[in-house]
Length: 505
Image 1 (tube, rainbow, N blue to C red):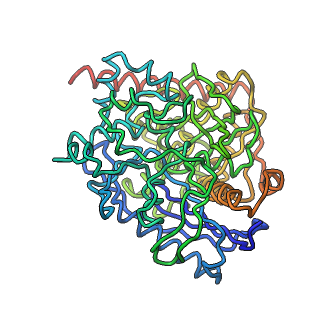
Image 2 (cartoon, rainbow, N blue to C red):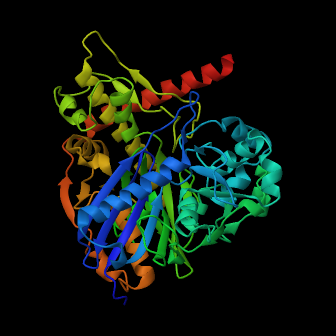
Image 3 (cartoon, rainbow, N blue to C red):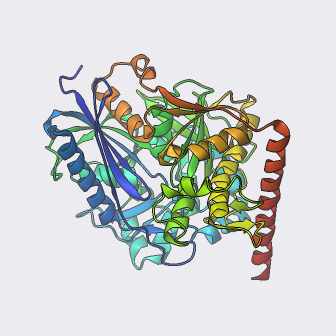
């Protein structure tokens, strides 16, 4: 066991970067977060500045040591968790990004996906990767960049350009450009990784026009993946002990180490993952098959359902409609009314994810009347988030052939008691909120600590995740079904409108 007692987790998310410092007893010594701007150059497009991502990470790391009063020299390992499908390309010589990062929410590659579907390739991608042909994933974003950035493709084919999701970019920067790698959990979100070989699939790369030379090495999730070099605020030679996609990290941080255990994370989007054990489980209900993690060469798989918009809907109320000034105000506003007043909000602001997979769908607020007020709007937004999760849970139960007895939840939006009570009401099962809501950061810390011997096995980690509060359903079955009926009708209307809009073009 290492003598150093601290583990630093870097949690690079869609709207900000966070740093978490824990000790061997899993006490949180400090937590810090720095936001950075979102950019929307066209409707449906979302971008980040890679340098702003990097600077936000450095700022969060500096702040966490300032808040804790501890030294970075006490750190045994660094763990990295990240927004997953967001796509970056940078120059190998010097590390300069060649284009803004294309964010996972971005829909600009919908035509590429449609073209691949018309070529009859959807089944092959699904069988090999466990994913669907949707703009959500990284592979079509790489193709778009290679086709639209002047002179980029020949440079990529000459080996001058590196591709990565955010974990790869941070690993490159943290190691001073010495390691170009990713882990299996992130690689499994690219449309380029074969789920059975757990390596890049040459055929899929050819279909997408992605040169193999741009791809990072596929690594274990928990291992010494490199060491720090030349990073402001961190001494050299600290081991990088984990890379893990944010949703898989939250599953690990919830101690869902066994098949049949599930969690839902409410962040910018909402993500439900069910541990399915050591074999990939195909979905017939619109879910994704993904790699949860790989430790000492042994892979664990998961079924995943994702809603593109969750907390982002509250941000939309705050930033675009100016209904609230701070996100935390939404619960109080929603409590000013007993219900949504007949309104149903479908949060398809970036298309519909699982189980519908309708990139052309757009958000809608249905059932408006002259008496609809700001409180009804806030209530409908929270309900819309919860309705989406019910769809994901039902699809997961159908694929797995089992009913979930409860749902563990985490993420920033779980501070909203009204949202979690509505979630329990609409699901009809208890919703469990852990003591530490930010289990995404915790998962990366646990995986990094395992890699260097801060913790020696999983048994001690199971006790770390304590339930802070249980929300029990208060709606009866008949009322629950009436509410779900209104939701299903609203989703059907949104999808019909999307098809009509597509047909008119």
